[in-house]
Image (tube, rainbow, N blue to C red; front, side):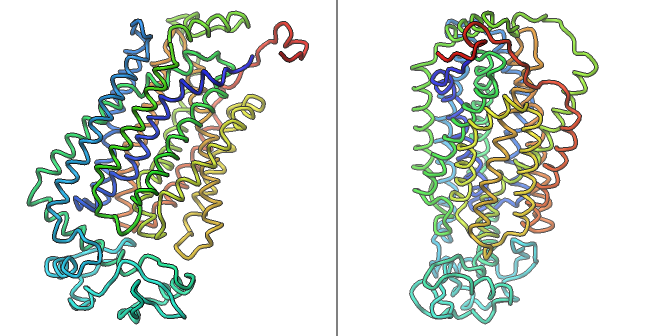
Length: 545
């Protein structure tokens, strides 16, 4: 049997636009919540968990509803069309609520503006603040107004001296700790870097100011959350149907390969958005108070363009009919041909339980990183999060097809276990990475994380739907998402709480522990792996077309 790659790629445009949306959402919404509205990491984690709370109920619901849909466009396509159109429009609306809040912050929104710094000091000098690593402080205990207003966002090292971008000596250089001096000394001459004093003292002060403005003028936050719920509902309408479409049109033995292509398309969507993030410099300190209207509009156009390509080439009823014909030719039983009331045996139930537990655990670790990394990168690593995430995505894209082929030969379970080892290793090493860490090591670890996650992701969903029966692919897609979303509901809150209490550096140890636990539970999964297919005709003689 051979996979129709062209067909699978066009089916994958639905997942392309889903991943494009979530990449933009995960990268920008936490920054808006903390920088513009002044929410704590715990509170922003709670907001970021909203989509997962909704998904717990809505993804299984819409998956099951799509199983019973009998439109002329097919079972899944109507949900994809309606949900994408609604999500794209409402996503742009979010940027207007963000712009309304930005008006409330006009007095402090200009980076490195003396008047903005004076306002911050006047309002927050005696407030109880906290650095990104969890150290409590008050501005008035550390700086005079003049000293605080002299803190620039960027510094350079020139001839061993710390200087501001205009070449002046940095007046507060004597306040650097020994560790900060060591980190600064590693920067190349003339290359700008983020001032640690700025991230430690100015950013928390501005976030405190933003929260005070939000409390005084809550309308913008209320509208923002309302639109957020609407866009999340729109995405929930079609996520399960979009993912269920691949098994609907792909014979069982080819689903790992097909899922590799689908995930490749998803990563391509993510990389495109990361590239746009670099173009718009959404991760730059200077743009921490930027307006997102143009950026969100471009993301919406990307989603609509992908939807147009999907609608142009994907005729769902015809593709489903072809899948059934091909499956019958090779003697493969499809879900529709299985017993609708067939019950799991004890071993199958046990395997499904441990597979779902594994999914929960690795999503607990991975989603903690994806939902908090934009904040972590700017505050701990002082890096543009777009670049490092793009490295992970590129590594995933390169590995998807080889992983799909490998899993067809060695099995899905063994491949997943290898992916867990890679992801745990990368997160463990990341625990010790800081701004001064070797760039090559940092890049290698993010690339390894991308490959590890791709290895897990390509095989886990096919293992779940391999167990389904009675034409219930949409239902089991919903079960898969219920497990993953349960984890993604809890982990932003739990990781955010630990980051508030222990400092931002708690992120990667937290992630590494949960992913490592998934290795243990995965050992108990005994069903859902690849099943060999008897070759027919010329294939049995190893004759190629």
